[in-house]
Length: 277
Image (cartoon, rainbow, N blue to C red; front, top):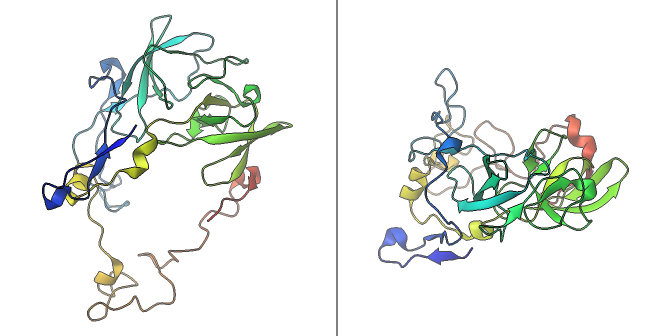
């Protein structure tokens, strides 16, 4: 959906671009599918900070999503399109014909009142329907794709994301991800047709520091503004360069242009074509 540009009434809102929420149909979530999670603020069980720049933020309630969508051959009617504070995409509350309700990731252009279904056989090719990759026409865009049959979707779940089914060869389907990487996935893995909703999410701008704090993001300090004992870029007088040939992280590792993927990772053999930089 389109975004809305905030009027620059004061400096804190001068560069702010927010969601319009025009596709959201209700602000009241389904209480039976809510869960309360404890904030950890980037700390482990000993209280040590293991992930920096996390903490604070407004209270949020977690929605329990169905990434498997394993109720097969049972039509489900879309009851509402809702906002989820834990993800960038919109979610859809669907009611199955047997009375059960579940939350699914909402594809783009999904409307209230439409019917979606999951099946192991070939069904109608429309956004929201879910079936194995081998039953989906080549060239289609899918999301919430499984990497292992029955484990639930893990690929393409963020706002505006999708993977394209290029071909079916032997036991595998070839998928092109948003990073242009071509990956092999077992042909009997399930996938949902369509592109994930909230396509304009990447156009939003926070606008001010307070909004980041409400989202649970704490400030980040530049390395060159620190002392030498705190960061490899630290030290010097005034606005000086980092003093190194290449940028480094806080822990002295290269920060740009170095592959960080483990060379012996088991799923490397499933990558048909590497991603572009």
